[in-house]
Structure formats: structure tokens, C-alpha cells
Length: 271
Ligand SMILES: C[S@@+](CC[C@H](N)C(=O)[O-])C[C@H]1O[C@@H](n2cnc3c(N)ncnc32)[C@H](O)[C@@H]1O
Image 1: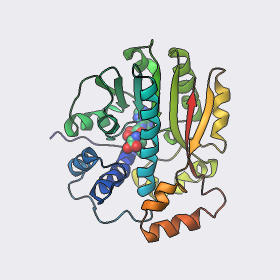
Image 2: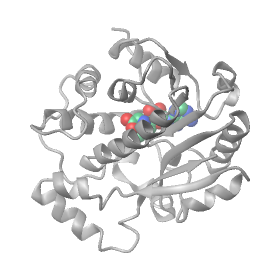
Image 3: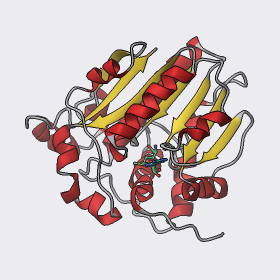
Image 4: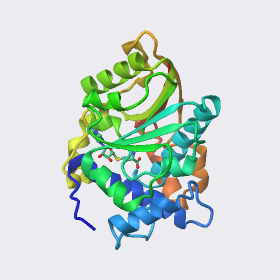
């Protein structure tokens, strides 16, 4: 295997992948994603298979992925001719979990180093294309069809973009396609502002670059963009049902703190 070195925000794909891999080891998993486990073993053969622990990047990340999957499935049921743009895909195996029909064209985009790892760890499939680019260099949009409904998914990506870059991405997306759904997760302003002290982000040499206390207000960025809804993460019934007792207690406690319950918000827009 060629050595690929991940840097900064690219490294943040690892704890999220680990969470999905650990989920697959549970007797009754949430995602049941065998590709996550395979990819994690390739990324770090000695990875800690011990416990989810109480980190935010644990079971809650699996719940977040399930929420994005459920929204994506609903959209693709309604739009079987869609183009899917999975932005900041990391080593996530969403395309295999959802297994869309051949009428859907799916694009996974991330930095070149991450895409190189994907090519090594995950199998190719029909109607599936990898794009090695920063999401902020919008010339990548020239490589996808523009005349079909679009589903833009960004899981765990938006906090690493500046608000200016996010705005350009969303407004250009709306201008490029006839109709579509955009779903992503954001962090609260306090989480963005304090991210330079976050031990996990510090370890990876990165930090957040934007945050929103009212993500629904993003709809005002484009006249055709409409906010649809939000789905819970830190207080989701699924998280509470699946979490081991210590993790559940930790979340119940943290969710009592102002700002904590909605420190990450998973939101959906349509146009
Ligand atoms: C927390 S990881 C999430 C990975 C994946 N979406 C998941 O949920 O498993 C953040 C991902 O965003 C990617 N990323 C951050 N900034 C990016 C940019 N400007 N362009 C493309 N990808 C980016 C990183 O390389 C990384 O793979």
C-alpha cells in the first residue's frame, strides 16, 4: 500500500470512521456498516475496538450518520433520477449503505489524499465517481450533470469551512441545479469559538471555521432556498435507546447545559 499522509481536518475522518466501525461490532448495530469496519482496519490496524466512551465523536456520530442516511433515502425514493454530491465524504461508506438504483449518479468528494485512501480501501461501483478536490474550488461542479435533481450531503464537513466558502458553495449549488435537497450538520457559535481548545481538534492540528445558532437563517442566503427541518442528535431517542448507561447519563447531564443539547444541529433545506 502506498503511504498516504492525512493532514489537519482530513484526520478528523478517523474518529468518525471508528465510531461506525465500532457500531458494526455491536450485536444490534445502528448502521451495520461492514465497509466502515474494513476501512478502519486498513486505516489503523491497531485501532481501539474497546468502547464508545463518552466522547461526542462516539455513538452520536453514528446517530448523525443514520439521520443523514434516512433523509437521503427519502429524497432518492422521491427522485430516482437524482445526482448525489456527497461532500467531505471521508471514508464513509454511505453509497454502499444506501445502495441507490442505477438511475442515480453518486459523487463522493474529498481532498486528493482522502480520495486516494478511498481507492485503496473501498471497492468501486457502477454510477459512482470519486472527485479529488477541495469542496471550495467550485470548478469540480463542471464534472457533474446539471440538469437533474441534486442531493447535497455534507456530514461533519461544514464546521471546517469558512462562512464565506459555505455561502458560495450553497448559493452556487442552488444556481446550478433545477431542484434539490441540501443536508448538513453545523455546530453552535460557542462550539466554533472554543474549537481552538478542543483536545481532539488540537490533536489533529485543526479547528472549526464557522458556527450557527440559528442554522435555519441560512435559507436567507438564496431566494430559492427553503429551510425544511432539523433532526435531533445529542438528545435523539435513538441515541438514548442505544447508548450504554454511562454514555446515556453523560448525555442527559450535558443536555441540561444551555447550548449543549443543540451544540451540533443536523438540518435540511430544499430548493
Ligand atoms: C469529520 S470528517 C467527516 C467525514 C465523513 N463525512 C464522515 O462523516 O465519516 C470531515 C471530512 O471533511 C473533509 N474536508 C474538510 N474540509 C474540506 C474541504 N475544503 N474540501 C473537501 N473535503 C474537506 C475532510 O478531509 C474529512 O474527510
